[in-house]
Length: 179
Image (tube, rainbow, N blue to C red; front, side, top):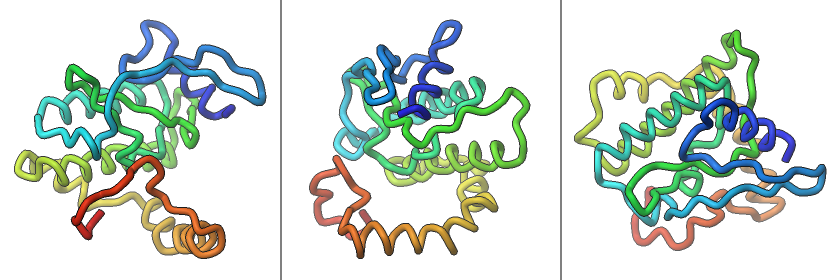
């Protein structure tokens, strides 16, 4: 909760960032956030390139405020608002950084962008630019290390021992075996 509160508080500074909840109240055992009307990406299935352009601007605004989301791979963290704009929720894994970003922050920021582009590839592959395809093809060193070490341990503990699934809120994905 503390991480989420720090991130949402940072994003509320100045004019704030549209498309993210506002922290309304925080005590060490409870964080109250504002509500954002919208449907999760996997249900809304955005097919408009403008949605993904706006989503990229939203991620850039987070990064300009020195906030890395760290969980943009989950479609349930992306909302499509009633007017078709993107919004983000679930800042539990977010990092707030000092203004002078180091290599780790740049790598994690790159991965935020890559995760957005993976979603764009799922819904609008014909709209990926050559630059976006290069970004998709180059995971950060942090991501590569996680995939060969930490993720295997994480999956073993969460799926085998605790029997958790990483698709909370995703519901039935239909017949597509890739999901």
